[in-house]
Each structure stands twice: as C-alpha cells, then as structure tokens.
Length: 507
Image 1 (spheres, rainbow, N blue to C red):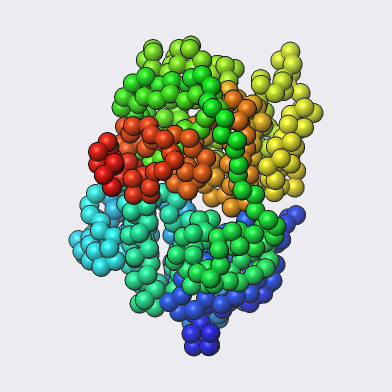
Image 2 (cartoon, one colour):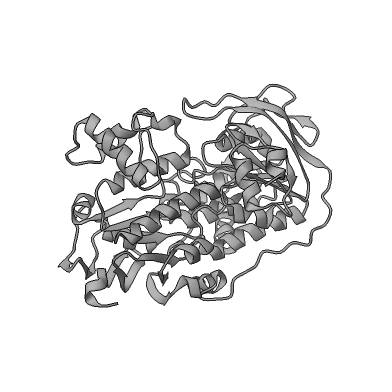
C-alpha cells in the first residue's frame, strides 16, 4: 500500500490501565475504501484501540495520521469532524422518540426537521437501508434500529466507519443487505474498520485483517486466503477446541410450556402468545429470533421474574408458573439473561459477591443466616479458572471485566451449579471463538449429564452446532419445533421472519 492509498496510519499506540496494558505498541494501516477486520480474543485490546481512534480514550503514547494529517481526537465530536464515525455494538437510541429526532440528537447543528427527514429518506434509500424518519424507534425491529445508527453515521459523510459486532442482531437476510451497503460504501472510497467474532463473515467481507492478542498485534492476514479456524488459532495462539458430544438418547421431559401467554412489562416489549414446547433431559433446544421478538420475556417467564397463569409452566411434572426466581432455582431451573451488567451481574459488586447472588443456596454459601465468604471466594475462583475469565482476582468488580469475560463468568456461574434445566439467552454474544467453544462445550457437557438445556440465540451457527431441536420466535409466537439436523440457513431465516409449515418446507 503506497502512502497515498493509506487513509489511517496507526503507529505505536499504547494504553495502560492499573494492572493491565490494554494496547502495547500497536501499529497498522487502513487503506482508502478498504474493509479492514480487527480480530482478537475478549480482552485483546480491540475496544480500547477503537476508542482511541474515536476520541473516547487518550493514548499514553504513539500517534495516528488520518488523511495525511496528524490525528489525536480529544473527544468523539473531534473524531466525527475529522471524518470518523462509529456504530456501537449496543445502540444509543431513545425508544420514545422517532427516527429523525434520534438522529438530530447526535448532530452538532441539526437542520430543520423536515429537511432532516428528507435527507434521512434519501440517504437510507441510496444505501439500501430504507427508513421512515417519523416512525417511533420503540416500534422498530433490532435490524431497523441498526439502520438508524448507520444512517446517522452516513449523514456525516465519513471517511472511516467503525463497526462493532454489527450482525449480532440480524437475520441472515438482513446480513446480506448490510454487506451490500458496506460494499457500496467501500466502492465509493469509505474505509471500514470491522470488529466481529463471526469469522466466516470476516472471510466473506473483509480485504485485510489485523489480529491482536493480549494487547499486542501478533499477525496480519488476508481473510479470503485464510480459513476461519486459522484466524481463530492466530487469535488465541493455540489449537482451537471443537465442541463434541456423544449423542445419547434424551431422557424424560423436564420442562414443558403449555400455551404460555405473558404480557410484556415494557411498553416497547413483545408479549408472548401461546408458546408451547417440551425439552427433555439430555437434549439442547435451540430458539432463534431477531432481538425484540420475545426472547427477554420468555427468559423472564422461565426464570420467575414474570409469573403466568396456572398450568402454563411445568417443571418435572410440577406446576411452577406462580413461583418466583429463588423457588425455581431451588427446584433446579437456572437461567442466564442476555443483559450482563445490571441483570446477570451487579456492576459494582465483586465477582465473589456476584457468585453469591445466584449460588448462595445451591452451592451452600450460607449457613445459619451467615455468608460463608471463604467458600464464596473459592466458588468464584473455580468459575474464573474453569472458564478462563481474564481478571486480576475474585474481588474485582464485575464492571471491570470486558463484556466477553463477564459473559464467561455469568455462564460459568450457572453451569457450575449443576442445574436440572438451564436456560441461557445469548450465551456467547461478544465472546471470541475460543471462549465460545468452551461455553458451548460446557452446555453440551451439561446435556450429556442429563440437564435439559434451552439456548436462546441470534447466532445461527451456534444454534446449529449445539441444538438437537430448533424453533424460532417471531413477534412473541414460537414456530413449530423441528429437528435441527438438515435445516438450511434459508429455512431458518424464514422461520425467524414468521413463516411456518409449508412455506419453510418448500424453500
């Protein structure tokens, strides 16, 4: 790549925090119009690096050159003014406002609302991401919300677009639409820095890849000429675990839902409508669905956070619809919600305290009303060791962990309590390939031991890897439950979109 072809040059970027060097002398170039992947395990330093590019974090040393000029943004507004835009993994939108109002909030000097609405329509249609500027964001699907974030960036006419895990909330069909948009941007000269743990997507989309490990750049590669497994092993520095199972016959029904209907507590949530299924000991039931189609409500109805009418939720032959979370845990039904901080874990509590939150009774971490802190620390330490949670120790606060490492801790905490039924929502969201393999193997091992496992996920590769049977949620309704083996991506996409029966069979 010649000097005139380089859009962003990064040289020797270093950033340290107490106890950890997040980025250590990182250098690489991004070309004009290039789709450049940034790969690495959780905690490898990807987030810190892009935050420095976007002006959210100031580097300790090193320099950047953007478009031939020194680049050291002191805040995101300065990065945006220089031509850098970013679509974050977690959307920053207000449900009660419409699309145009949300986009205006992110602009330093927004035009009149009518003019802005016209620009939104024009830009969204130009890039194949049609949006109605007057629709309320709370009524949009996850894919449509992502369009809002992307169009907000495109209105800035960016030279560099950073995308963090952009396909985690999309159906296969929506992924193709997004890729078409990114290829169009690339052809027009916009560079894209693309972060994803979905390595086959990286191979299909990206021109080049930079791989980080423990804060340092360890390799570069051309994704189209490198297998997903090779990229994963470059990320972890060792051979990748391939989840395996013996495939023994499932046991008796452990959990049954019989026409479960539950009203969502959120104005913008999705109520469950006549959801029915059974899951047996020793099997994994995979439930797919684009975000916002009732997954959170289903997990809450199974955990006991939402109660239901009698006869709708049956555990080991006993009606439990009116029982709360602790009572269900005592009976062996454990859950791990999607939202890590604030729901699955208390942000300012230590890992020991977070281990206590759900493990106190099943792990014997209380005696005669007193907490057994030594045993609680040992439990937290065992989770950290088995699931390779990257943290200085058990007394670190949950919020100090990267998202992927906190996810490993949360899933590990539930797995190690040996549940009879385990329900997990998005078990490997934002988790690197090696950690995802460990989590999936742990779920398969539970099933081998007789646990009934329900995996709610938007990662279709994950569901196909672990599931015995498969169904999809759409607008709070569950499709027919079918064997997972032999399903095509097209059939799954149709099920996620609400198609049933013959429509799916005739793809």
